Image (cartoon, rainbow, N blue to C red; front, top):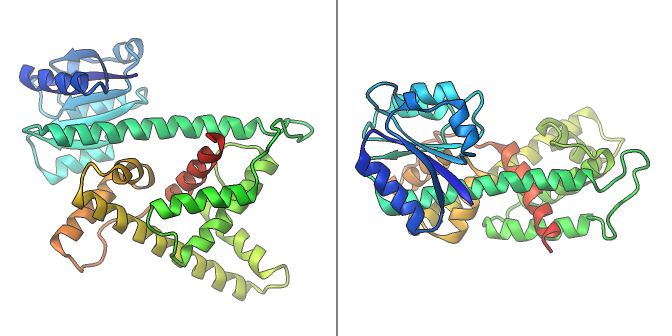
Length: 309
């Protein structure tokens, strides 16, 4: 069960947030405070706070300063709430690592959607950690012998990846073939080395290009294939973002949007894309897509599908 802590100098706001959390059975309220100065490392640690709600403007110590102080030791998620709509202040809040910024007056459905997205992200991160441990345990540290009776294999991983790409709306994109090859490569890397974390993005594309063209390929041919593969993958990811943002515009509570948008993309990126679609903008994209994050989540989500079977 998720544990929440709410900091706001307005009693009504604290009460409303607590009621939403409790009525929807999203978790329990671990504590409340009316100013950022009342929060410290011991409080967060002792209460095992997973999600922290914090107001931006408070009389003694504001939300920005409080987040700046707790960030070095607090590993949970932070949702900021405020009447302030200054782009500069919102940007500063995001730069400090908050997950979402909610503008007052509070809207129950917006709060519900955001809390569920944050909970999903927490669960995803925990699943990734569990999967990393499971993958590390697949092989003995010395002999490299499998401990699983039915080890993960490439066809299974491709099938799980195909299911995910269909959910993301890009199963038929040209870049999907590149993503399957990337899943194969990552499977071999994780199996051979049994290490946490993924290789550098550049190395991934270089390796799959080498696999396709063979050892006799020239440097020019390799570079051409690497660039083409990167472009196909980026276009596919961009199409996935477009697909999910469209779902979110149609229905903010759409299950696919709630599950995949915050997992595969940063919230600010999804929000900007939704605004572009809503305004019908044809201007160049004003956001940056994190290709490595997308690939990493795709790999761990595909692995999770197999481990859950």
